[in-house]
Amino acid sequence: YAIDLFRQILSIDPDHVQSRQALRATCLKKCQDHGFPSAGKAVLSGLGSRFGAMLGGITKNVGKKIDSLMDYLVKDPNNVKVRVQLGEALKEGGHLDGAITELEFAFQTDNHNGPCARLLGDCHKEKGDIPKAIDYYQIVVRVMPDDRNANGSLKDLLAMGSMKGGWD
Image (cartoon, rainbow, N blue to C red; front, side, top):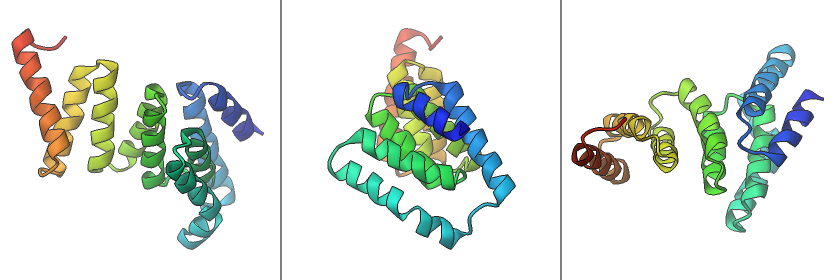
């Protein structure tokens, strides 16, 4: 029941951070109480959700993609790859706070995930939180030194900061 309630709130306001956090905690608790799915079972039970996410991506229906990825994460809340995909879909839909929340969950689990750190840098840059964006881009450059996008963004932000006299 709680999962459905939080999903309804998030369908109305995808950036509602407290509901997103509570949904994740509820899903984790449910999995702890009933057992986490085995890798094979998680893949099989999530095929419909993954197909829906793929279809949402193909048709450019961001809402469908977000719903499908959230369906998958209800069954497998620790799946970093799917959580990063959800963060990317939320960012694509203009829901930066929701994207940051999901990406931070993923990054807490795998703090060497370059694509996740890059998306976090992009989200913070779009929100105007330049110091956090710089921090995440520096992580990307450290774990993925050949990432041109992160290198370019980091250099641009550092140059703008030096021209401005630093970032607040």
